[in-house]
Every structure is written in structure tokens, then in C-alpha cells.
Length: 137
Figure 1: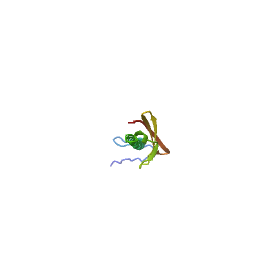
Figure 2: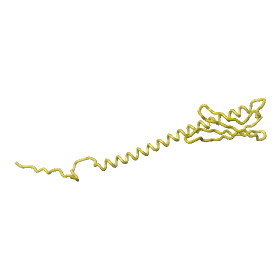
Figure 3: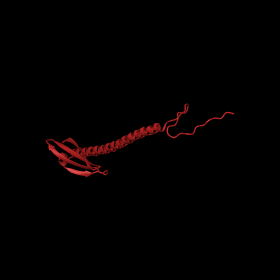
Figure 4: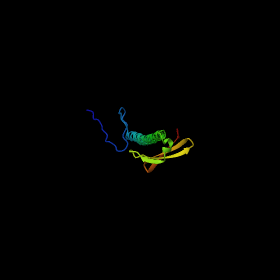
């Protein structure tokens, strides 16, 4: 009868066993590191795109409010009997928290209307202006 000899496990480096598949601990840690960097980059892009969407929404609301005010001034300038004489400086606030100010300046038979729109942003207000010329009949 033949006796087989078994060796005791050694501490430290494991012997290479041919035909055994798998990943080493270093390979797994490196792949997790790369995955973490990729997920972090995606999260940063997501936060940036969310800020851009919010900013675009606020800018769209501000332009809409300013354009609506310009159209109201145009309509007021076309109403008899006062026509352009009815136009005057003023201010208003929309239900969405947008503040509007407008100034009317005479230019001969025209009026220059400057509408300033104030929207709340983190840390203060953002100010946008629309300038148009209104013909007087």
C-alpha cells in the first residue's frame, strides 16, 4: 500500500494552482475603485444637470413674465383716448414670486419700454431686462 504525502498549508503567498479560475483580491479592489470613480462622476453630472434644469426653468418663467408685461404695455398704448399718454412707470409681482419693474421713456412718436425682471436665486436675485419700442398712434 502506498502512502500519500500531504504538506501543511503555508502562511504568506499561496501556491499557484493550474486550472483554478478566479480573481485575486487586488483585482477585485481595483475594479471596485474604478466602479466608484465612475459612479461618482455620474452623480456629479446628475447634480450639474439638475441645477441647469432649475436655472432654465427660472429663466423661462422670467422671460415669460417680462414678455407678458411688454404685451400689456403695447395693449395699453393702443387704447383710445389716451394711447401712449396712459403709459407710465410701474412695478408688479407675479404669483410665482417674480418681481417686475418697467420704465417708459418718450422717443418722439415712440415710447421705449424697459421691463426689468427679478427672480430669486440662491444668495440673492437675478435681474434680466427686456427693452422694446412701442409705436404711438
